[in-house]
Image (cartoon, rainbow, N blue to C red; front, side):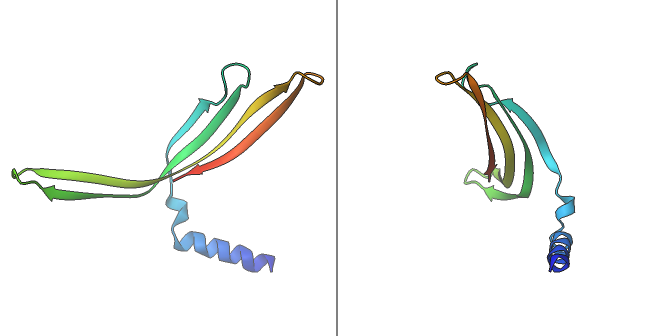
Length: 99
């Protein structure tokens, strides 16, 4: 069963040409609430589809309309300090995907 699932993923990745998907940009940013909850966020941007249309205006000029679909997965974390008990630090992490 494990081999069947592996073959399905392997063939689907080659059929949809997933290996040619290259990140358009990589970013890292500060994620937190001032200095009390410091954190970090890291992600990449992939451009899935890009197309453009040319529209003829009434004045005779052409207007180019460009559209694209981007996928931006990211991973981040921030630290929370609990003062009430024993000055413990808690690490909170998240995974986010935007399209």
